[in-house]
Length: 193
Image (cartoon, rainbow, N blue to C red):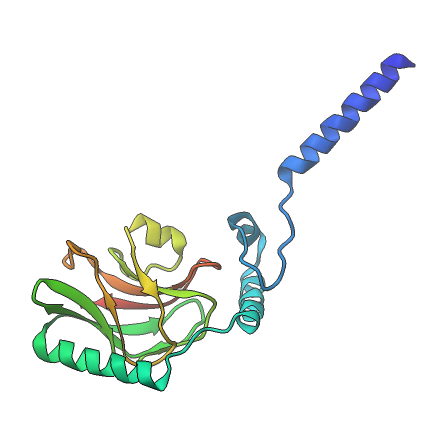
C-alpha cells in the first residue's frame, strides 16, 4: 500500500511537471502576444487579434500642426539635401501600401522621407526599419538581414521623416520596412533602387 501511494504520488508529480512544460498560456485578445503564442496562431487568428488590439489601442496620427511641421521639414531637407536612394512601397502579407520613400543626404546626415501620397494599412504598433535584405516578409528575415529600427510609424499616411543612425551605410541598405512589433508581421516594404 505504501509503495502504491508512493508510486501514485510520484506519477502525479511527474504528470503535473510534464504538463506544465509543454503548455503555452492562452492569448488574451488586445494584449501583446508572446512568441510562443504567435507560433500557435493561424494567419487568420493573427489578423483578427491585430484588429482587436487596434480597437483597444488605435494607432496615433499627426495633428494638423505636426503634419505641417513634417511637410516643412521634408521640403527644407529636399532643398538642402540630395536624394541618394529611392523606393516605392508595396503592401505585404495582404496589407495595402502606397507612396514612396527617399533616402536624402544633408551634410553628412541621412534621413528617410516618405512621400505625401504615402499610406499603409493601420496596424498595431507599427515601426519603420531599414533592412539589408530585399522584401523581408517576416521577423526572421529582418533579423537575418540586419534591420535597424528607425522609430515608430508617425502616421499611417502622409509625409514623415526618420533619421538614419550616424555611421549607417546606405550602400548596404536594400529596403525600408514597416513592421508590427507585437505581431511580428511585415505590413509594407519599399525596395531601394
